[in-house]
Length: 113
Image 1 (cartoon, rainbow, N blue to C red):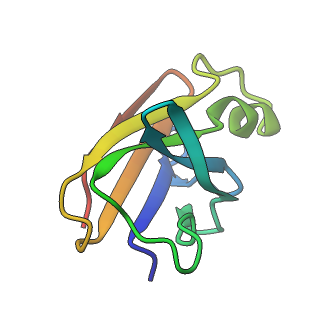
Image 2 (image 1 turned 45 degrees about the vertical axis):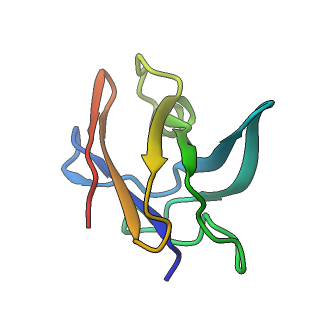
């Protein structure tokens, strides 16, 4: 399993947000560098954002979710075109799971397990 995973639940439907675009970046001294990108599967999970052989470092990371594209694909006008979650990795040997609870007009996140 990747050292970093995410899961998106569409709370307006009460089910996983399948097909939502996700990008993973790491903060460097000169800005953000993209490490990976993908789409959530039928269960709303993105398990392979960190490419094979790439390990987490002590750094700040950003997960960006294409919430606007997801809701547009459902024919719903949402308020947030993107949701970005910035978090710190302090112990690279641990697994980091960052879930997103998403609706057209709000979102919430937490550190999962």
